[in-house]
Image (cartoon, rainbow, N blue to C red; front, top):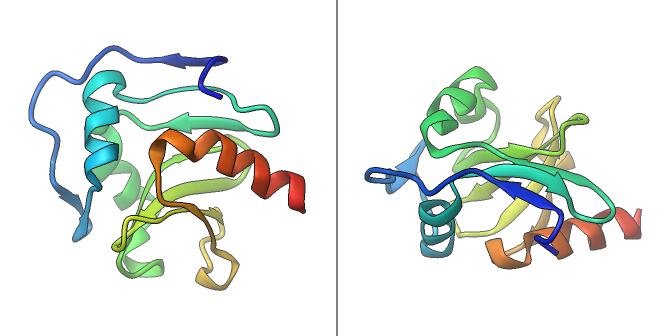
Length: 124
């Protein structure tokens, strides 16, 4: 499902091992080393993955550490929902009003994120 996704070039440098105290999963680090974010259509949604160099700034801007303990954001759908990772390596979606009660776990693999997003939207 990454076929309609426009990736950035590989990340040049050391990827941080954590943001907001959340350890980045190995699959995410490997993926970002190769692609460093990008955006595109997943089928049922749009997905924007923030470049590594913007992760801390985006998490600070949205005050994720204040509203979502043990979580960080890695992207959005460009329409009011944020995509993130929790401290257990799960990928999630949450409205940008950032209330944890509205957080939904999508899955635990960056490779499956587009399919997980499609399944989430198709089930609503």
